[in-house]
Image (cartoon, rainbow, N blue to C red; front, top):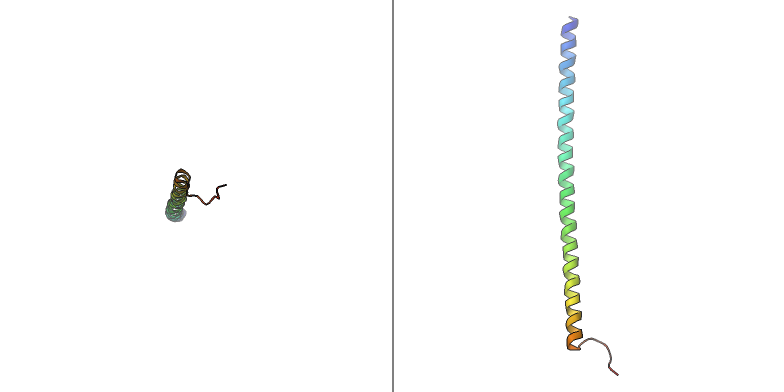
Length: 74
């Protein structure tokens, strides 16, 4: 009887441990996906800001070259 109880307890602990590992793995995978999405969003926003800055710089350079900036000449 003791051996049967020991086997049942061992099996129960095995199932509990396996179940916890699977849940932890799923949570880890979900967290990694969320991190990946955050990185993608951050990269997209950064690229947009760089592009906007480059366009502004190009406009400023063009104004300086063609002397069409808003400065008053004396």
